[in-house]
Amino acid sequence: MKRLALVMLAASTFAACNNRLEGDKAATTDSKTVQTGEGEAYSVDSSTTITWMGSKPTGQHEGIFKVQEGKLLVKDNALTGGSFLIDMNSLNNLDLTDAEYKAKLEGHLKSPDFFDVAKFPTAKFEITGVENFVADSSSKDLVTKDATHLIKGNLTLKDSTKNISFPAKITASTGKLIAAANFNIDRTEWGMNYKGPNNPQDWVINKTVNIKLNLSSTKK
Image (cartoon, rainbow, N blue to C red):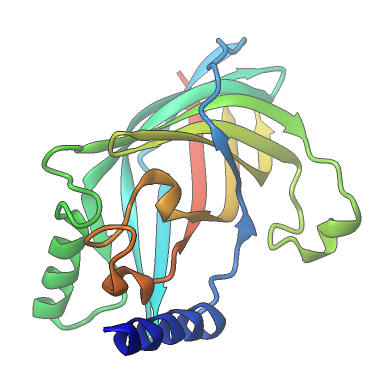
């Protein structure tokens, strides 16, 4: 048993080193109070995409979620607040071409082993703050090289809520606002562990999950 644990730990380390997911690390803290933003309401467009990527020793898997609904608040072409709901049942794998394996992976991720979509059909992101992005000595390592702002918000997955902050590029024009970001989160921060946090089968799955957010919104 001890030998098995060591083998699984070695495999987990191998996965982390060889399947590194490229993205800016999102800072994670306890949930924060959501402040009411100012400005006009913008509806989150159906063209918004949330791309996810996870990895294990044998490779990576990528997919998307759809946004169910959302509203942003914009004042003087600046994002001030808002929230959106993610339809967890919309989870769709993009890299598997074999229909049977694709269905198995999607079913596995939707099961109580991970997202438990039957019990938790939506996830939620609520903006708690938006700041101008200030470059520093660590900015050279950013994946989002053209970041303009730092977005902070409460991310609720299943029954757990954590506040995350990540750099994003926000562009605004008359009646339109778009935000793009590429960041990594640690799934275990939300209690997402396959068969428990100390199960060797969970060790071989990279704790890091990459999220690419392309949020588009239009003035109501």
